[in-house]
Image (cartoon, rainbow, N blue to C red; front, side):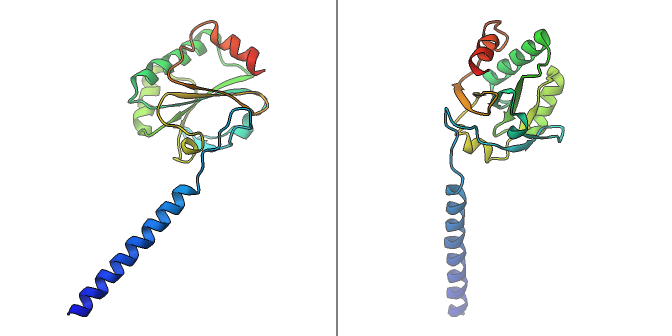
Length: 174
């Protein structure tokens, strides 16, 4: 009987040690590598409608990459300002807003997008993209120029409906 107890304890201990090593190894293999002045890390994410989006497919466009969550009040205000900008100016061939859900329920965000009439893509984070971009909280925004170079990081909300912001960004990022 004692042999069985020791055998079970040994097996459990071996599983715990192996599991913790694998878990630690998995976490350290993903590294933050989004750096200003270098090419923005590529990703492939699905949006709330199932469409795949890849950063490399958007070369030649200014990309405003915004990480957010539906539970974040500042994010809600910011998303409304993105939609206000798009309502006033329409979609653009050379500029796109890509928003990425961070630690959020896609169903909740989808309902919010539908209720608020969002016309911009709402992508679902794969829990790797946010690590690569070094997301610590929301909202966080990355400005990527037409060549795919990461030019600026903004921590906190932006009023995208301010008539001076986007024209200034176009000038800087073109």
